[in-house]
Image (cartoon, rainbow, N blue to C red):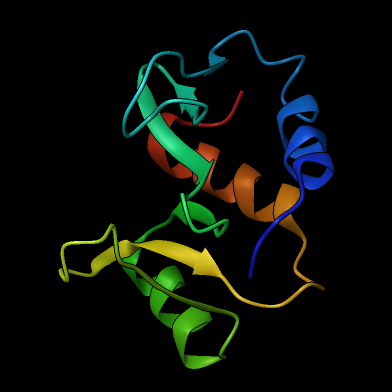
Length: 107
């Protein structure tokens, strides 16, 4: 589901007090993504999907519940730890915080 820039801005703003989180710059994969210690943990895909990196078991639960789907970066190979969130009612900030804790430890 396509996400608005307002929703993404709220997610980014929720990490304003975390000095280890930065927004990726440049072009290609990772441009505009949230990173902790250089590791991407959340981004909005070119298709407008909100995508987070989670432990496989957590991502699998989201897939089973129909709350997310495995992210396909476009080459047909699903990235099983990367969950593309489905549904407008998802708490994107909470999911981004889970992803942050997973990739770089929480502050």
